[in-house]
Image (tube, rainbow, N blue to C red):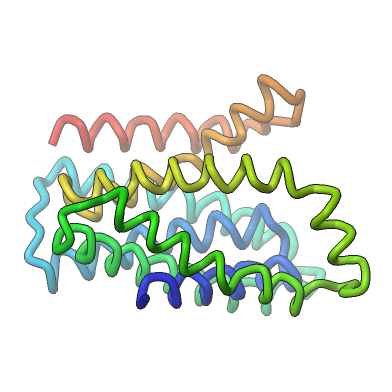
Amino acid sequence: MASAALQTCYLILLITSYKHGEFSQVYPLARGLAVLLVTGVATTFLAEKLSFWQLAGVAVVAGSLLSLALTKHSATARAGRNRQGTFFAVLTGAAIAAYTVVDGVGVRVSGQPMAYVSWLFLLQGMVIPLICWRMASERRSFPRRVARYWKPGFIGGLVSMLAYGIVVWAQSLAPLALVSALRETSVLLAGVIGAVFFNEKFSRLRLVLTAIAVAGIAAIQLG
């Protein structure tokens, strides 16, 4: 229940971040900060041991994400629109770190990753629709949108459950800091997918940061 509550808080904070800041700034900031927080908590309070190369890899991955966010921050700072977005992104990162640690400890205690994830999504499913309705800009049209998009939403939910199930399973076997760092590289790799399959712009900066993140992954593997 603690994890479901934290992930619900994460969702609320994430939506609020998007309302006050740009996606390309707030999301990498939240994810990069979460990696650092999880690493600090896991090594300090959970007695997880990481080698030099593993710590270096985690730092490189987190640094690549934060660099992307800070670059976007400097590009939009003149407009004065991103201060609140940054604030809520930091809170979002703290929420991500909190539920990551809770899930890591919880799944190790339960010993049943898929059962743990199933209960987590069941509890979330009771609350999230109400939150989405409450935060919707046009509540009257909310039921129509649900009726129109329930199929892709259902498929996306299944994929999300499977993906997070893999994450939780990995947390039951490996140090939380490493799982968190490897998971968050998806923020950068999503840019590659967008460029290859959707013809989206892939800047030189994102290319460089993706290469740096890959180097971080290699360092983690060497560790």
